[in-house]
Image 1 (cartoon, one colour):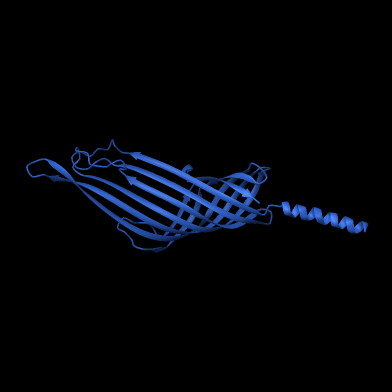
Image 2: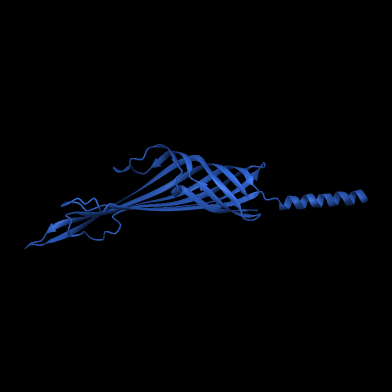
Length: 239
């Protein structure tokens, strides 16, 4: 009976330790960049307006993973990306100093299911470096709208402007695979922050609804993006 009691106590301690072991992780990352280019000093006299460009890029992802071994996680997730490029975004009507005026807005919406394998190496007790191999499939929808302001001479003198608007829409699909280096800080036993320092990605275009005259994207691309605007921050929760 004494030995049986000891075995039961040992089993209870082992079971309690197994229950507190955290084998799953929930992670998120988000990034946003904004760029505005003012080219007002490059005035072309007599025919065209100046050109200003505004770019907004928002990226968000969620994933759930499971630990295996002591240093690896694997899991599934999805990502969302919204990219907008606007030429002359503040132009609502032509300036009378120009003969012609135009404005254009290009938007990309991307939804991406993904799978990943992540290696985690401890630096200190509460900090780790990570290297993540990600495979992702992108479903992309693009819209583009351009407005032209054209001069018109009125009967009896004077001038007016005619507004013409044209638009187009297309869809594309890509397969992506690449590496994402990162850093992780554990603020508590179950919660912490993530930083992803850009990526190295190989991308293949697999489908496209139509190829416009202005679309010169390659069918295969290799990209390295480590600028601060490509960094992503987020949090993780282990359970």
